Image (cartoon, rainbow, N blue to C red; front, side, top):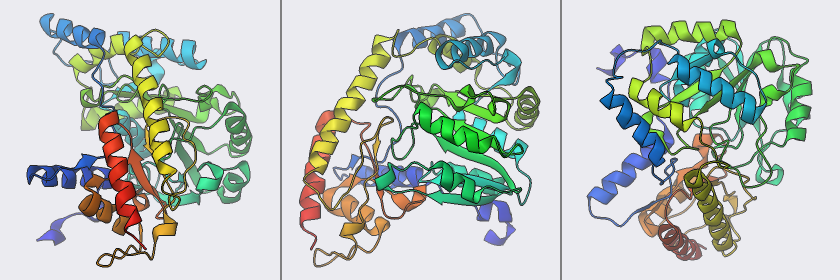
Length: 401
């Protein structure tokens, strides 16, 4: 019966992160003691003032449809935030609020990409980038990076793949899955390359903007020569611990924003009115003025450092220092070909399943992110769980020879 399905959905891959989370839940339901290091969301609660804003919205019956692109007061607050914090100027009508940043990325991609257009993606990448590009009919061009370069592309690498068919370049900084973040100087050098390709649009995913440990965040749209072709993606899921509220946004050229409003109007219409009213409060919070967000970021940094200390006991897992987000992305090729006598590790999936079955720790294979030599370890869980998980991983890896 599967032959009635469209080619579009058949060609789409299942999200590996969601699939691993599903398998973890199943094992837990069977009674197994699984520590989940595959999850990609903060284990902190939404700030109190945001929850109070949502309760107030319900009490005041703000439960009706809103404009497709979002409430005027929310888009105005987002525009003010982008100007004050990121030094990029957008009018409220250049902002589209969506059901999470993922929808914002999909809106932009579907409004920009024609069949045959090339979508350029540095690898490793967030799992949904190439799948959304395929959904739009685009041809995915991947730029490989490695742990030696902190998983960041160089201007030379980018220039070598761009051509007249290149329509979109999409990346995240700080990155999921690597935690790497581009500096101002690195982005300026890339912007100089992008300036030479006037038909190329840049989707800059900045959802981990607040979760940064070294230096400060730079938005790609700060460079005037390319600003009108930058689509700035952000939201409240990560920095404000609002994953379940499903609230993201994009800021872009007015014509593109209008097109995304048109598309969203035919698919979902507006994001939840309650989530939007909560976001009016949430968008005003940042690590400088919110102790809850500041404490969350500090906790993530502490966890990162502890995980890296444990990683020193596993020389077969080569790591770099993540600048932000809450992931470690070690190169594990040194373990390929090893065995514990009954299980042989030939690739990243084998290792991930070995750690799940032997160590009872869930991680995600790197192939899902475009690098089959790595695995992704999330430290978005308690220190107790992290220390227990890392000890289990160390014991299990030492069984391999």
